[in-house]
Picture (tube, each protein chain N blue to C red):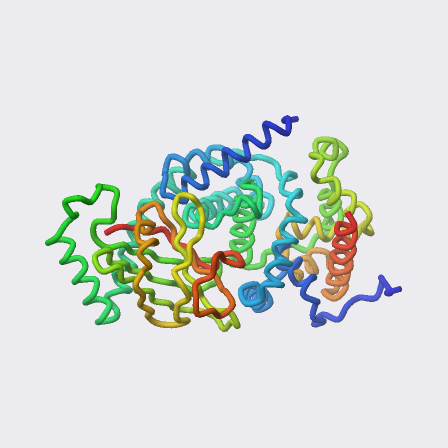
Length: 189
Length: 238
């Protein structure tokens, strides 16, 4: 597990590279790619579940990063989250535009459970995440699972309802009540 | 105590806080997503709620597993980078040719640049001819074409596809230091023309970025943007 100082240094380095890319520095942009493409590809692959589509989404995501590097604000987001958010949104857009091929499966609930974190992952999770995870854990299981599934698989309400074979209104109420509780819990800190 | 088992009606509208979370998680699609993105633009309170939710879910990104992409992916990006830059310039030029006045102005700038060339005392890193930029962002259809003539310090901005908002578009120049400096508010649609303030002229170079943000209406430029830029573009010197 990296020391905080190492994390800080990596973060500062990445922020610096994004700033250089904003100024048109191609080498800095390639360095960003080399440092982050495995993470961003993992994001695309989780959402699209298809290697070719994920590679296409990854290309689109890095072109957006190149064009929008000037928008990055280190005060508002960590650089890796900023990059990963662009990858996630790009993958989601690609999934939605590619037609909703959501399979209704008996395994959907089982798959949803696989979005639970393993004990090992919990151990590896850094300290800053404690509040989010403590608050997610305080939700009803179905509220927590549906929120985590939405995040990690990039499903819309309609896709979730199809996937879970559950009425849309029910899915919305699970999510919305879960989100309200999550916010209240996190704001209480 | 709310009955936790009672499902919501499908069309029940969420409060703003919930809507912000839904936008961040990617639960919205179609018209709902478009409406939420427009709201993010026009409503600073809502925009902040979106920022706050992004921060709340931030730790979840650590849970995505790393997977190495094929080496060919970078080659594809690099080739599109070159193609994209080139195409972008062509698109800008085409756009400028659409309007007779604009086309004339650009032709004049280019001609002037060809005749005059760099000034004898101009360092090579200074703009030598005309600066152009195309600004785009997350709002589908919103495109700004910007042209700047360093000889006259005249900047022209052509706005297309601006959605309805209560805020006004304000243009910013961001140099290497990352600090946005306002060039003032511009028209919502069509061509705006302005003379760039003298202390901002040196900032218009190939390392700078132009940004557009949505701000409360104001006669004088704001000291700093209140929210996320809605469109950005790098400056290209041609």
